[in-house]
Image (cartoon, rainbow over all chains, first blue to last red):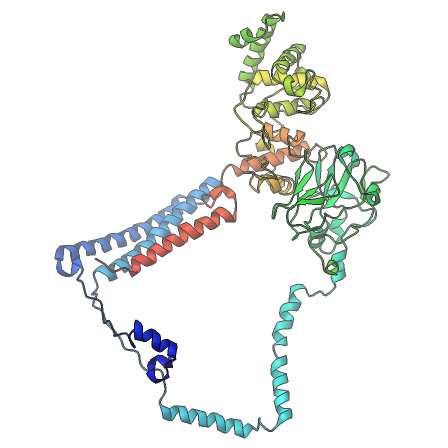
Length: 345
Length: 261
């Protein structure tokens, strides 16, 4: 800025530019030419504007009266339709009641109050030279008195104290997010050897015979209610149970024993960012995640065939117990859900 | 009916008998069950099966095979049951007319009596799910709250939280349930048409299915807050807020700032 005010300090570039096109300072253009409004010289227009303000205020009054009438005449009641009517009428009453006042105030100010332009000059912001010199003197005196320049240990202690102080704010902020530094629990779910597979949300155990070909069961561990925090455990343990025609099922050699007669169970937590993957297409055996369209092939180890997910869904090894109920052989053999720090290696 | 009978191949002998049966069944149907296809599976007569077989041979056998055994282009219908026929034909999906990612609902091609006959024929091929009774699908007898819990877990991921449908992969989609009849919703759960998985009675019991139907029925009343903007969540709501809402605010600001003439 100072270069503009002091021509002597201009760079050569600026000199060249101002010499060609721009003046050194723009003159103050002053106020634009004043045009009188219609209502300023035409009494009829003035009267009309006044009437318009009165009409707007009358709309506000009617809106308020309408609101009060609607409050008594159209209570929310018990049906969706009556609630909708009540909401609509109260809302319209509020809209006209407040909107009328606002529009009237603006219209009043614009058309009836005077429109003479006024300007107020800004006061200079800079303090006087004496005040500035006095302030610098006080600061310098304080700094010299504290001896911060020569007392090195004191300076170090002060800097340390100031640097450590923000921990009191940061630590609770981070700590309160989980208050739990045990990350190993993310490697396990509620599934254990012998845990029965149960229907979500009823918790009723599922028999293998109930799962007909083409069926989908949304599954939780049968003993989930025994968990201290059932919802936390459910968030990790939800499973999708599907029965395919065994001829449609491709299984890796090390997973041959993980299914039962075409019944397979996969984690419902997407390996991309953890949305519940549950859009199962019966004919193609494709499982689609609604968030980012990752698609998994349930007929082929839930491998990713489309979308941003990087890993197949973890498979829950299942078996059938003596009573015919589906049970887990073990927990998942890998952590469920989105990418995990162990895999960063 | 008569035009229909005339079109049927006359070399088959018992035309008159069939016509009478049609009239009786059609008349009873119109009187007793105007909205839902009531067909107690035990009440199907051999006449229904025979007529259904003829309808099948004329309209369905090209794709599904002469004895409904299935071909390369269409699945076997042995054991799919009357419920599958009532759903597929009753919603106009079958007979399919165009190929595409999935067969779409269209104008129904058969009348109620013919659908019943087709269903009786297919049901006679092998045991399968029967058409539910009017009582099975009565929304008034369902528990809406339980229906919501079941719908949220089993249906909402494809059909949207309030049942307006949504996209699947590669051009397929889950249709809206807003215009689906309770009977067709029940049958779809029972038989798992096209991409939809099967929800047999071990998974969702008959009462559970009725609860789901009651929940879907309750959604037809709309939203107590006013317009739902399509119930598709942040897309339409955001568009409304950013374009209409902020547009109005900008308009108000321009009006307030403009000089009065």
